Image 1 (tube, rainbow, N blue to C red):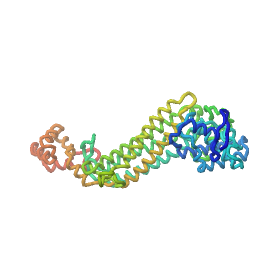
Image 2: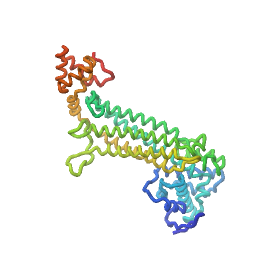
Image 3: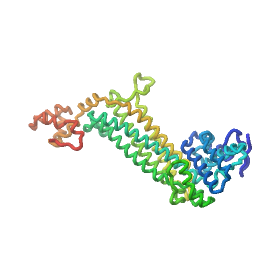
Length: 458
């Protein structure tokens, strides 16, 4: 063990860890929940510390050997990430996590300069955190991570959309009964149902693609409340450029650093768009479950046999992937409420709930990426039960709807009632009562013709 000191007192720290006393106090103060920071967030945080060291050296505020040691430590982030142990749900607007990074980098940089952990040849505050504040580093790292995750979400939406569009083409000639409120409606092509799902995802794709523009605006350089206090003007003006160069993420300095520090509405905006995607994934997943319901159900889709569905019923296969997607998507919807509430609960110059907001925004994206990937592979394996689609269509009476254009709603309704909803008998009844050619009536109720845009009796 080694002993470290702060203004509160002394603590013993295990010799083998890279974090220090501030992190140790946080671990005591905040019982573990099991929640972990997104890896892109951890990477982004290290890269901001690297950028700050590079710029501070260029501007003459850090000695060369100290700056180089900090940069080298940050480049070793994959080896050091396991020492970032403060969890997302901690108090202090992210101060504890910032100090965790500062201490880990400082101790590793000290080792690089042939010192021992805890000697702090490189100081966590005076060197690693120079000209920074938790309040500008934390949200900037969060936005960098969100952009990286967001791009993955958009890419996965595109992939799922492509798979569904392939199914749309494959199933476009399969006639079936459409349903409203789970009851028989009018005919539709199975491919048209898939096409509607693809169009819903297309909207998600463009909404999420466009929102990146708002996320790029960061407050790095604003330090505590956006005024840039304790940082020289030349640093404030240049730091975003160095971070952008290192991360290759197209961030830009916010026009108003005070606004960007205290107002977090962009997180509520993106969370709402992620929720919209979750809503569409739930709808698609539930439709798959319904259309694939077993032999006594609709049975119009043959769902992939990917695992046994029961410990007691032999041969049962359940729609486990759609159910998995629904569970993750419902979580995303819940996170959106959490993020929205936390966003409007910011006070004055800072949002003290920053760790929660960023963590659950990133977690929503992780859940959606998992959902999109799983659903893509699943839908790829779905087959159409064309015979059942045809059977369900024939057994339905609602595809005689076009006859109301000739006879009127009341007469067709009466014919259905008098003939026990048997389509053949209904057509025969109408033909005889109103002196109409039975072949012409049957032509009018061509299901394939009914699935086109509009309907013309001629």
